[in-house]
Amino acid sequence: MARESGRLDRFIRRRVADVSDAEDILQEVLFEFVEATRFLRPIEQVGAWLFRVAHNRIVDRLRRKRRDVSTSEPAGDADGEPLVFDDVLPSRDGGPEAEYARRVLLDELEAALDELPAEQRFVFVAHELEGRSFKKIAAETGLGVNTLLARKHYAVRRLRRRLEAIYAMFR
Image (cartoon, rainbow, N blue to C red; front, side, top):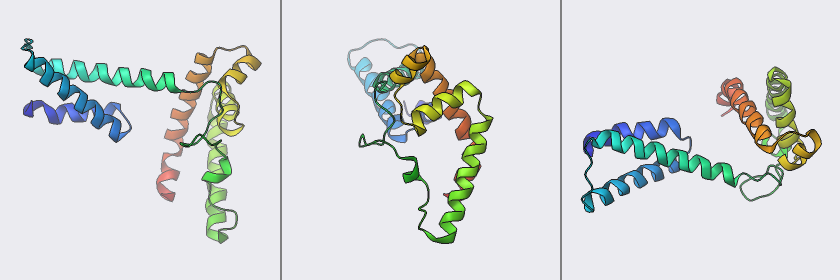
């Protein structure tokens, strides 16, 4: 176990963005290993077994999160309050530096949105900026909710890559 724990931890962290989720998955894998050895279940290749269990736990966690995504409610913050785009930007009353940062961020976001394919841009804007639910968008467009979720997922990935440098600059 000691031999594989470092590699296993890196394997999980490369695939799970949230550090606490990665730690939880590692603990689940270790617990399963202890349970398997406690009940004397033979494990021929311990390393391969650990990585398979880790992979399965990662997939389970992603499926659970996907189920938890609300398709009837608009996007919101951790408390369930509707997300107001203006709340995440520097204040309009914060002086010249804040106004400059606000303008740069808005210009970069606008440019990044313009670079998205039209169908991804539409779903991202409708859900994140206009606050419409996936069910409402699906009813309006005739597209399936899963299609809309996938398009938004791809839009978010592209936007993250595109805005990574500007985020680092203002962080």
